[in-house]
Image (cartoon, rainbow, N blue to C red; front, side):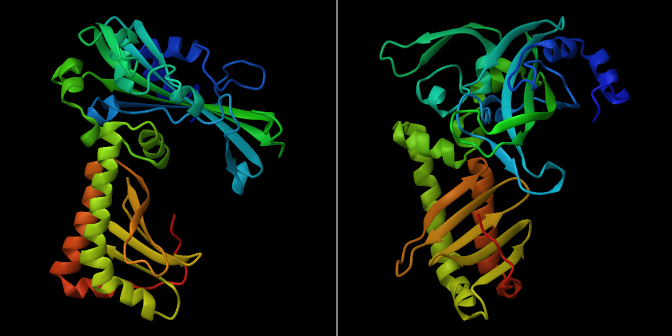
Length: 336
């Protein structure tokens, strides 16, 4: 949407702090080290527990990362992304800004805050053991809105990986997406108190990998919970008829719909791979050749979302045998 569209003008008038946020320097900048906005999207929602544990998905800021487009109007273009959180009080004043780790190196070194709830505190310091941080100066009562900002800048792809950022050639355009999260009924203090990693943390491969390497107790525990879901699916579904359908099909691929959950299965490089997905989450299981034990290959979503995927398929597979017939050979299936 154009930055000066009628809808955007009305929202900026309704929420005056938006004009200040849009004027602030935020990576990635445009080709002239500025903050032009070619496309602007603004949404308003109510804050929830998932927001408290939201993490930035920064890409291409000070490292070799980038997102590439291979087709359409973005063909041969690459993109950087930066995300930020702001706390705004009832007088429309910005009282806190959080710059998240720009890349994996900053995350590992503990630079800046990893979760959105940090915007509700004015300062932090290392704890006595040096393994974490203590937060002080609560802004929970003052905060009326938490504003999440995503900035993306597209450039022509140079094809060069010689140095960090070398891939980004001529600047194309810069977009900003803003979500204004209003104060929940219970207030931000209670919301942060009740939010937790086992309900609200969005899980992806990078988070799991870093958490295991860093021996984060919560992440290690979560990996065990994901593995238990894998074994449940393996015993109740995959080795209980699903694998036979895949094995006996005309080609090594099959798919089916189980309520809101789509199941995709195929063979890739000698491995059996099964993905369960819905509109907001997925989990992928894999089985090595000659092995009798599946394992978790990847996932995206919160634990409750992923758990619901597995529970739905297990329940429908076992309670209604007729539904198994919906899982049929599919030569066009593709699995992440």
